[in-house]
Structure formats: structure tokens, C-alpha cells
Length: 239
Image (cartoon, rainbow, N blue to C red; front, side, top):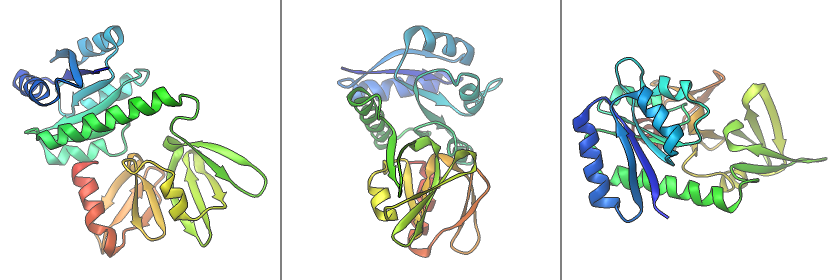
């Protein structure tokens, strides 16, 4: 079944270019069900036509892409943010978007987003009850934790501490390496031998030393020299 795609961008030229690229490169596995320059109209159409993937421009007058997501949190839709400005790309980090694309759009970036969306759709259809959750074992229980609730994971010898939303902490009787293998690599990244972070919960990157990551709860985590280039790639391209 083809992936149902929509586009919201205030520039008609950007819409036409993206429509062309999707038709030329991905007509076999995607179909565009609507496109519009009006975010308000786009929200109405999204509720009516129910696309699975929305390409949403960040820098729009009136309502930005980030504001659109906040105003329409009830929409069950995967969102890929688009922008012509590198400085706006960091806004994608920490949002619920599955990624972002820098204009002019490259076919490799479209392929990355389409692949992520297809994998997410397949996973959703195969296991809706356990989708996007990990089973954490400790000495007296097994807790199912949503990926989205995990801010970061910290190595503690043969154990791993999960720092969760709401200032919760959970100690798992598994190593960080084992936990990492159970989490989606497109959403979680190793920034240090002792830290694995949820990319969507990154708030800020600090340019000092080898770098530091500020998480959504304001915890500041070190970036190791070995992981610095990968972290910069994530920040610049938002995987």
C-alpha cells in the first residue's frame, strides 16, 4: 500500500518542486493526497483526508511549522519538517517530527524520510499494543516504557539508568549496550561511552570542549571526542 503524503509550505514553488521529486523518485511507494500554502487549511485537510506523512515547512508567516505541531498535537501523523535555512533546523530537534529536510531537497534526504515513515507504519501495523515501548527488567518487576518517555540512558556498570520524563529514574538490570540494541537507532544515539540520548529530547548543543548536549530536562551531558562528529551530523541533519 502506498504511503499517503501531504505537503504544507507557504511557497508554491517549494510545493511544486517537492511534488515533482516525489513523483519522479517515489511514485511506486507514495502518493500525494493534498498540498497547500495555508497551514489552517492544511490542518483541516489533514483531519479529513488522514495522510500518513506530512512535509511541513518550518519558517511560514503567521503559523510556523513548530507552532502548527503544537496546535495540532491530536493529529495522528508523521511529520518531516522542511526549511531553507540551516539555523532553523535545530528547531526540529526536540519536536515530535521524525526528521527534517534542508532545501533545496536532495533525493537522498527524501529516501531517508520515506524509509523512516514506511518502517514506522509497518511496526505500527505489526504490534500496536507494544509499539514504541521497551521492557525494562529490575529486581522485582518488568516495566513497559515508551520510547518517547526516555530522555537518555546512563551506564552504571552492569546496570543502566533510564532518565524519563517527569523526573523519573529507572534502574535496569541490563548494560547500556544491551539497552541500546533494543531501541530504534534513528531515535537514539550514543554521544559518549556512558550516555545514550533520545534525539527528539535534545534541547541544545553547546560548542565547548568536544561538545555538550542539553536535554529537555536541562541535564547537561558530555560528548566524547570519538562521538563528536556523529553528534554534529545529527544536529546538522537531524537524522
